[in-house]
Image (cartoon, rainbow, N blue to C red; front, side, top):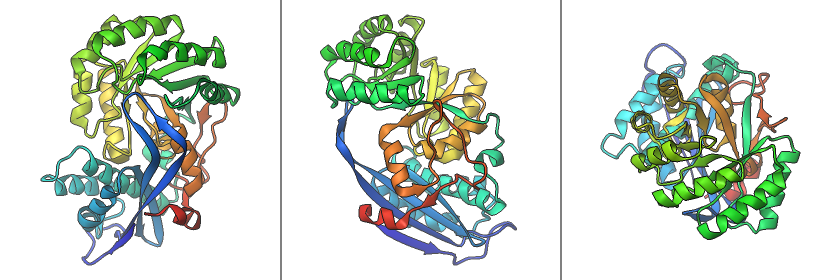
Length: 375
């Protein structure tokens, strides 16, 4: 799927106008069946947006359904074309206004995210600045954790993947749990054996447990040195998250937020005291603009922030957002992004460092390589 919309009206404000927008979708099969506590999948779809102005092109993307691409073409492209390429905030507000009657969560916010990410890249491309610098860099690099350990993996594959990340220099890794709760503790012990006694071990239930079940598992996980328990119950169950946060062993951080689509969602989660660490995803929460809004809320509530998935999108805003603790180096996306883009980053000693010699996000779309996956 590939569509294009061009400028038909005079630009707003005085900067270089956005003249054209292309949107495409690509479906990449997984290298083996994958599952977590509540979902299973065999492919991942990436929706790509390319925005053009002043002989420059900005690229952004979201991991979303092809319906997201259709929404961008039918609704959002006409909203941003003609706008000042420097006025990302104006474009963001206009897109949020345009989807008022369509519903903010879900597809609409992921569509806005893909465009917003491309707009930030475009602005930095025109100014010939790396995006981290343009946003106001506060750190040179961002710590990352290896994330995968799918419930579909046999123990040997689980140990190979997690142990491999540790041998590559990561100090923390995350695995999926919750599909077969009776096997989870055994899998956690196997993971601990593979990564050694000093590396941090995170677990992610994707909301698969009940409240009492999650509390019991938290006690058992603590004995295995687990320090991060993500979505022990549904992220919609704020009282349940708060209950587990209050009663879980002190060494375990409770985290959630990856399904947040707007700042109101994040505010409610923080006001409820539901998490020790908030998560946000710039491919879901209406882009880098929405991610930075989440960072502002975290700063106000004095709660750390961790980015969810899509490492190539998050490295620059994570280097510019003070509350960020770390970035998720998710296996699927860390595999896909180098397939479709030049300029993706390789972790060094468990950290990602933006390439400040490249403008914007530092990515170049590999159109020929991507064509085989286009849908």
